[in-house]
Structures are given as C-alpha cells and as structure tokens.
Amino acid sequence: MEPVKGGNLATPPASVEKILKDAEPDSSCASWAVRFAADLDGVITVLSGMSNLEQMRDNLSYMKDFKHLTPEQKKVIEKASIELAKLPIIPCTTCNYCAKVCPMDIGISASFASMNMYTLYGNLGLAKHNEDWNVAGQGHKRANECIKCGACEAACPQHIKIRDELEKVAKVLL
Ligand code: SF4
Ligand code: SF4
Image (cartoon, rainbow, N blue to C red):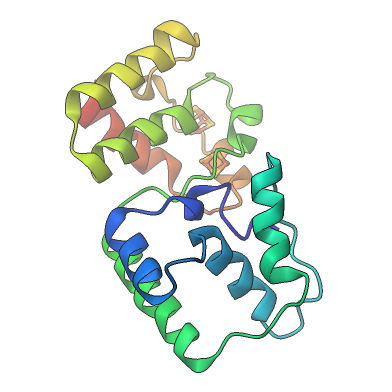
C-alpha cells in the first residue's frame, strides 16, 4: 500500500526529480515508486491510489505488462533515494490517523505540510500563512498546544516523532 507515499513521490523535490527525469524523461516520477514496490521479492499486488484518468493511464502503461527493474534502473532509484534523504522533510502522508486520536485536535498533518513547504522552498511567509490557515481557517489547535500525550505517535504508520516535530513547527512557524 501507499507506494507513492500519499502522492508525495509523484512530485518530489527538484533535485530528486532531475535524477529520475535524466534517466527516463518520459517516465513519471510516480512510476518509479510503483515499479520499485512491484519489483520487490514476494510482492504480488501494489495498491496505488489514483484520482484521475491520466494517473490510471500512466499506471497501466508500465504495470499492464510489468517488467522487473534493470540493475541500471535500481541504481537510479538508489541515487534518488540518497538525494531525497538529504532533505530534512517530515515524511507525513496526510493519512490523518493521528488526528483521529489527538485529544487536543492539533492540526498535525497541516502543520507538517507547512513545515515541509518551508524546508523545500524556503518561503517562510507562505509557510506561516499556511499554518495560520490551519488554525484560523480549519479550527485546529496550534502546535504549541500539544500536551505530549503520545497518542498520535502510536497511530502514525510512518513512525514520525510527532511531538518533536511539532516543537520544531512551534519554534519556526508560530
Ligand atoms: S502528543 Fe500532542 S499532537 Fe499527539 S495526540 Fe497528544 S496532544 Fe495530540
Ligand atoms: S499519522 Fe503520521 S503520516 Fe499520518 S497524518 Fe499523522 S503524522 Fe502524518
């Protein structure tokens, strides 16, 4: 499930996208993620969410007659993943499982999206604006109102240290 990490790997940071596009200009970034999952030993099904016809056509173009990754393609993925790991983004997929258990209704995923926006693009004003909308527009509580109960971390499939990350959000964006 979630080979494209909730869509995040479909539009990776520019430096990662460049590696993938240099290797195969006509392949979508999402296709690399889905093919990586399909190529793993023991995998017989890859569940990839699609939200429009174009995405379905793209998925079908390489999964209808799936061919295992070549050693060269595996090297491209390794290079891209090393590049991606250099960027300190929070690996949140916006599944919002954490939101269902948070007693304070902290806008966790939206706060992380704002923080990632700042990390990737360096636009502090826009990131703060996003964070304000998370609170004023969506009615969530601010990151600094977290009571550190830890319920969210037990529910997070990405094993994110949510309490620590919220502290950083509060420091940078509030
Ligand atoms: S640790 Fe904070 S964000 Fe997580 S569930 Fe508790 S109050 Fe909510
Ligand atoms: S459970 Fe984890 S991955 Fe899902 S929205 Fe919350 S922080 Fe993000």
